[in-house]
Length: 120
Image 1 (cartoon, helix red, strand yellow):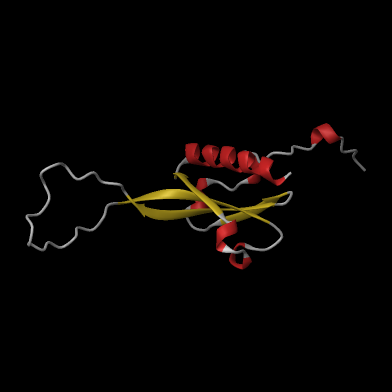
Image 2 (cartoon, helix red, strand yellow; image 1 turned 90 degrees about the vertical axis):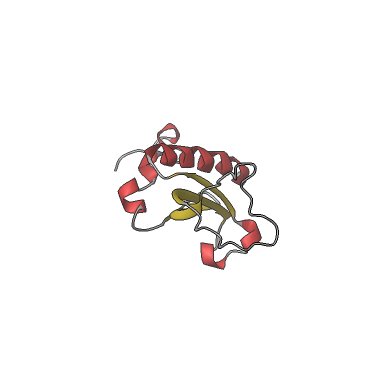
C-alpha cells in the first residue's frame, strides 16, 4: 500500500480538479473542498451597452426596447456545505462571473482558492 505524505496532499483547487471547457459548454459542474461547495456553470448575460449622449428618444415617444446583446460567461458559485446548491439558502451563495474561456477557468480557480480560505 502506498504511503501518502502530508506534503503530497494539495490543499488547493487545481486545474485537475475541474473539467475542461468542452464539458462546461454542455453541463454545469459541482464540487467541494473541505467545507466549501462550488459550482461552475455556463450562462448568458446581457452586455452592458453605453448609450451615447444625445441619442435618447424625444419625450413622449415610445420606442421598442432593443434586444440586449448577450455574452457567454462562466458563473462561479460558492456556498458552505453540507447541503447541495438547490437546498442552500440563496443569501449564503456567492456568485461571480468570469470570461467563458480557458483563461476564465484559471480565474475561476483563483476565485475558488481565495474563497476556500474563508472556510477554514
